[in-house]
Length: 281
Ligand SMILES: C[S@@+](CC[C@H](N)C(=O)[O-])C[C@H]1O[C@@H](n2cnc3c(N)ncnc32)[C@H](O)[C@@H]1O
Image 1 (spheres, rainbow, N blue to C red):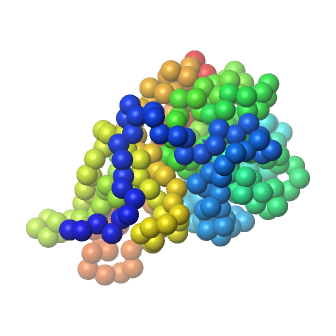
Image 2: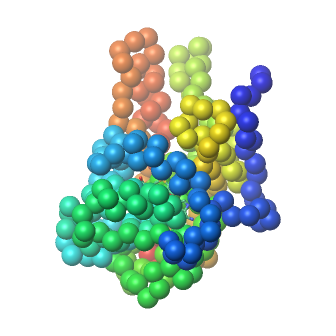
């Protein structure tokens, strides 16, 4: 079958010769180029809005807040905060929030949508000069590690920023079951069962995501698929021990119909999101 896709997925393991997908900005003033998320900022901001999408509101933000285990007045970093939806959620819970993102356009939206109590900075999460000397009781990274080309320097920064005993909670689309363009639903007529087909898993692969996604060419961001091993190794190499893991399924249900029961069962069987909790070793 002919693919409509104009920008192909590519394997990334071991390849380090491509220029970074985004500027390794030190700060807003020294930014040399736009990130792929700058061009997607208007679309993403409209998608998320002031309080978040359904999955953010119902599953991701309450789940991460619970796993951070922080109390009023604690200092927390919202890493790759985007337009600041989780920063706003945490500020309302009485936490002192700092947000960081490499997209200047999204940081601008975060500042205009949020109260003065949250502070926002434009940095690459892997920049070793970012937030120098700052410490946090907890760090959250929501739906963004899969958009980062290099995770090792990011996790090293997390280890540097975390106070002793502090938790780093990351949520990503589940790399075992949800890989854009490489995982699909299928229907087994004999078993009357909805199944999940995975076309790859072990190979680190960069996949373009068009913004908005229904396009087949033009502006796009990247998803960097990695197997679980890559995440666990990078965390360990950064001096972080994984102390918790949760797998969150969709809370949606199918409209009544012939396949609704099978679809609902499949939704409960194959998690949408992977959550890892780690602390300094
Ligand atoms: C899908 S959005 C998630 C934003 C936000 N956490 C949320 O839940 O709405 C991914 C974000 O990762 C940011 N990002 C990607 N790579 C980054 C990097 N190396 N450093 C900082 N932010 C990065 C993008 O700018 C974008 O805001």
